[in-house]
Length: 336
Image (cartoon, rainbow, N blue to C red):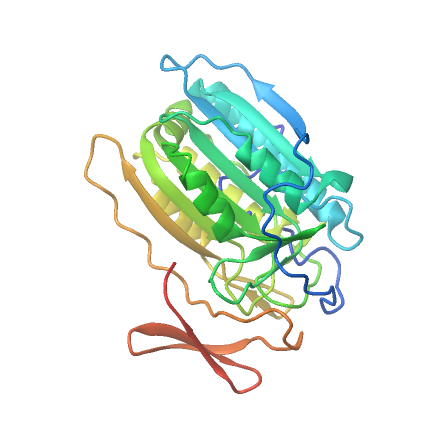
């Protein structure tokens, strides 16, 4: 990838917030509004559009929806870094793969549940297209999924809802990523840097043209919070970009499974632990299906609980993964 990236990233989710944020943040204290059922409050919204021409022989398109809470007083500076990195990455993917890029960003004062759903629903996707959804901003655990939700103006929106909506459009490859908290408080400042390796154009083509399926990822598991700073953006997004760059420089065939497994490595900073999670359900076209990555543990925590309630320990019980909360309660969950 070109030097356009300050610290670039994507994915894909794909499947990535500086989510709980930049400098030290107070406990999350926003109200817990009911998740809106309306798909759009402003059906005429089109988002900020960025495009790149393509040269792919089959005319496939890379569709992207980038959602970033750039106006937030606590995480906005960090989120702006993520937004810039993601847009730059999409340009690199287009140049190296020949995929035409049709991207929309929802940020600043336009950030709302209705506008995000309008951007998603307006995508016209063909069977050989690639779709990337990325969110950077405040988040929460919805209580009925291991995946986080996005805290947006005029309502909340879960990552699972986004993934299911986009899956119904039947893209060849879908990547959904949220760099956001999966708990109830926000983190502290800090970060790390990396040097980009010698990425290969053929590896861009391998990753973005020859895989089929869905990738879902978030920067922390339920009961945990995500962190970042104004220099590198979200810590998870930075780690994801590091590992994406390594995979693009590989002498062997690049693998989404290997990439996401490395990106799941726990992130520790200033005494805080953040454990990313991912679910990789893709296969290499023309080869045998790849195996699914084992998920890092997670726990479901309902909105509205005390902001100090987090997971103290994780364990397995009766075939399920469970967590012991700081309030002494036990939570268990099924994979979704």
